[in-house]
Amino acid sequence: MGMMNKERAKQTFLDYASHYNMEDPKIRLKVGHTLRVAGLCERIAESLDLDPEEKDLAWMIGLLHDIGRFEQVRIYNTFRDSESVNHAQFSADLLFRDGMIRYYMTGSDQDQIMETAIRYHNAYRLPESLTEQEKTYSQILRDADKIDILRVNRETPMTQIYNLPEEAFLTSEISDPVYEDILAHRDVNRVNSRTGIDFLMGHIAFVYGLVYPVSFRIAEAQGYLEQMLAFESRNERTRERMSRIRKEVKDYIREKVQGGT
Image (cartoon, rainbow, N blue to C red):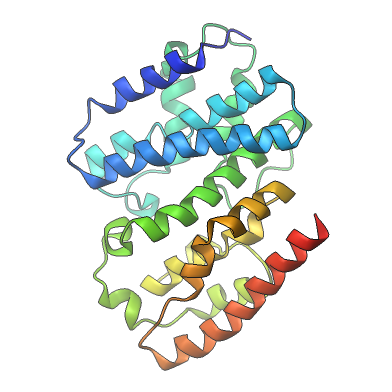
């Protein structure tokens, strides 16, 4: 496979990240997120009984999935792709068009799988054209990323993540298309997210995009989703809708965890 030693790969990543402003909370957030996603990818791969080399590949994909975020923050000072660049495409381009992947792996036999998983990890839907292997690794990464973004949303102030004042979350209404997506058990289509509370709803709806049984169990055990659902809005209509959303999401998770599906 031409895979690097994991410790060496991790150190290569940390060395790269250290060239950016570690005083910037956005940069620190991405370093922590990256390492946790790599670990989650490995854990999900293990639940699928993948062999050690395949688990290492899942881990490496997690380690590199957001490599473009550092340049995104340096250039644009935001994580919002709509105001800057598509960070997944940007990460894949840095790795596989600009050749950064060779700092992490010597061989190229797994490049296609890795590039596909990284390039589409934030896509609303995966392309139908993916091979079974590409689909599996893409789903592993997407599950791991969603699970940790739930954590990030609780451990980092929303105002910092979205560059919005607190008032934008407390007083805004949930847009109708966002509300409809959540009630229909769908990932929220980001093009419909317009208000502060919409962004929070979009992250709550990540649970609908999870694929593997272990992912639901990890997400439930973390407790972050529960905390997000407990958000207290000052907007009466939003409070009413949140009450319905709370029930829908909790019932959905309970069904997935108990059913083992």
